[in-house]
Image (cartoon, rainbow, N blue to C red; front, side):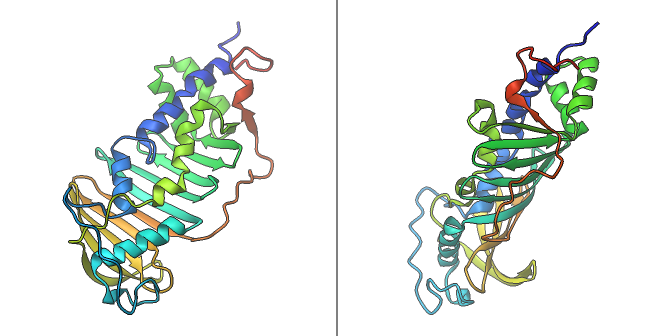
Amino acid sequence: MRSRTIGMSVLAATALFGLTTACLPGGGGKAVGIGRAARAAASASAGATPAPAAKGKGAGKGTGMLADLSGAEILSQSQEAMRKVESTRVVAKMHEEGSPVEFDLTLDRKGSCKGSVRYNGMGKVDLIKSADLIHFKGDADYWRATAAKEHAPKRQADAMVTMLADRWLKMPVSDAKASAMKHLCDLDKLTDGRGRPNPLARKGETVTVDGKQALAVITAAKNGTETDYIATQGTPYVLKSTVSGDETGEVLFSAFGAQVDTALPEGADVLDLSKLGDGGPAETV
């Protein structure tokens, strides 16, 4: 006797997009608040005044003269630099309600994206997004978590893992179910500073981040403290941001201007989601 079709399994599994929306940075939930904190210093109060225009030797040059500027001026320059960057690699570790979330993505202004995401208890998902297509590949833990989220019976969960684990799936970017993945690959939202730099921002120590000299700028966050580490040589990019307090997080930025490779691995076994779910040929598990 036939088991349920893989099309039906995939339809159930497409809840993974809703799962992604709920749990991953950029999709919603508390993690997005941490992401915003890591992107830029927000205003500490509703009455905060605009940051003064950068003045002095280092104004607008980003050539190691940041020490001559105020904390707010440094954050203003770094926000402007991050808004202009065409591509970057983002490696993040954070906590949402006590559960660790990690992602490692290289993305650009065109919406191209490549990397991986891990969420505690949900395994790992690899992601490649081009202008037209989204490819993703979940491991066995990811698909079991998806099946559990949908309350799938064990036989169906086992079938999903057998057929889908560590296999590339693709769908058009235009598909409504792909919105969570698109959101995750939005460099504009990731680097767009929210609000004005806090005029109370305070300069900290000069440290080394990934072999580059950086100046720490400390700001009061909503539920703790946020520290941005700004490159002191060349363009004043944010090299690292940390959040401490009720929820913790760390985001590293690197590979500024690097091209995003959206090619699939050679010989990849790809399942086209747009062709499944309607009882078509070769859909039985």
